[in-house]
Structure formats: structure tokens, C-alpha cells
Image (cartoon, rainbow, N blue to C red; front, side):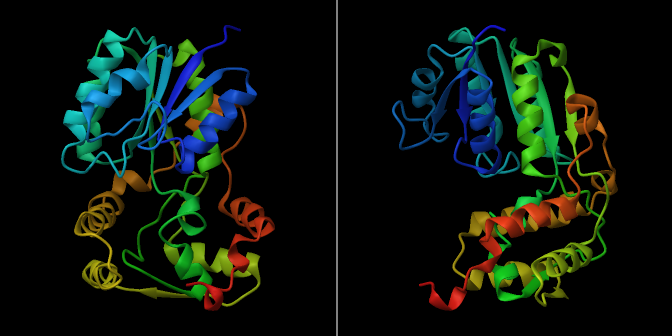
Length: 281
């Protein structure tokens, strides 16, 4: 197998970190870029794109914070143009399942002249252990809107395994891979599974989207972040198409997607849910 030079944009995030580890273990060369790396990469500074792409064969693209935010389409267009100029062979874009704006970014990649694979993901298991909802779990009080939504939560390890494979396997060129977990769960059911696995009481409180956004504002989160979560709850979880299970993980990897209970077992073993918030500042 040819050794590839692979660029990972968003290499410190939930999937980027895992993808970088995977492709390194497979014997490829990896360049992880961000605002503080050398060369630096800043989505808001298109002049930084060329240096990050130079000498690379393939790239994994994760747009932060989400392809739904204003400016994402323009940035993706400029990045693909720069990638084509630098001679990249292929890009893999992490996209959002059921996001209209993300689909517009997918079209830009598909029409860029580059070989590509699109990987569409929905809500990550790891939001409860590495992301926005970790503090809720640690406090034993999870208050979220859309309690009736049935979500096929996907594991970040599955996403990274799929991405690492399609990055270097050209049989997936031009394809859209939809990654989900193997079953649908409500937020309440996910909280019950975590409580059972951790061995402590965690209460789930259904709230409105407006109440959730007000709580985020009260916590001092920026307006753009508040808007994004409101969008993801209302537009994405409110879309029935996003509550469908895909079996693409199994087709690509030859194994079933990770069940939520398996994710809970693995996360309990890390100790992340045993933190004591009373000793944090």
C-alpha cells in the first residue's frame, strides 16, 4: 500500500484526533493543522490554506463549529480551490446528516474537481463525555429539549474508522457514507443507559428549545454557539429523516456499528464520568 501524506483539519476534535491516530497506525504520514500549528490553519483566513495543503496527497475536512454556520460555504469553496491548486488527490468531508446548509457544502466538494467521499454523521455519543453535555452528566441533571426525538447516536470511533478507510480507499470515491448507531434512542433512554452503567442516579428533564438556549446564554456562551445548538435541535432532530438508521458503518468496516451501551461501558472505564465538579474552578 502506498504511503500517503494526509492532512487532518480539526485534528484536536472528537473525530479528527481519532482519524489522525488511525492513519498514523496504518503507516501514513499525517499533518494535523489548526490556528496554533506550524504551518497554521485558520478557517477565517483563506491565505493560510495553501501552506497547510502543500505537499499533501489527501485531506480530512472538519469545519468548526459546523457547516450550518454563516461563512462555511465560502470557506469550503476556497479550501477546495486551494486543494486543487496544490494537487491533492482526494478529500473527505465530515458533513451533517439532515442539514440543508451542509448539503450545500457537499455540493461544492462534489463539484470541485477533486476526488472525494462525503461522510454524513448525526449526534455523537461523545457529546455526553467529551462535549457539551458532559457537565450535565457529572451533575446528575440532564436538561435537554426534543425529548420525543429518536436518535441513532453514532460513536466517534466508528466515524473515525470509516473516515480512515475511505481516505485511502478509492473504491469509495464519489460516494456518500451515512454513519449512525445501530438503534434509535431518546435522550431519556440515553440518560437511563448512562445512569445504569455509571451506577449513579441521573435525572432527565425535558425542556423547551427556548429554555435550553436561555440557559446557554446565562452560562455565558457566545450567541453563535447558542444559535447553532438551537438550529441542531430544531432543524436536525426535528427532521424525521435524521431518525433513520443507516448500515453504512457495517458495510464499510465489516462489523456492526457501536451500540450505545458499549460506548457507556468504554467510557466508564476511562473514569471521565467520575470527576467531582465541587473541586473544579
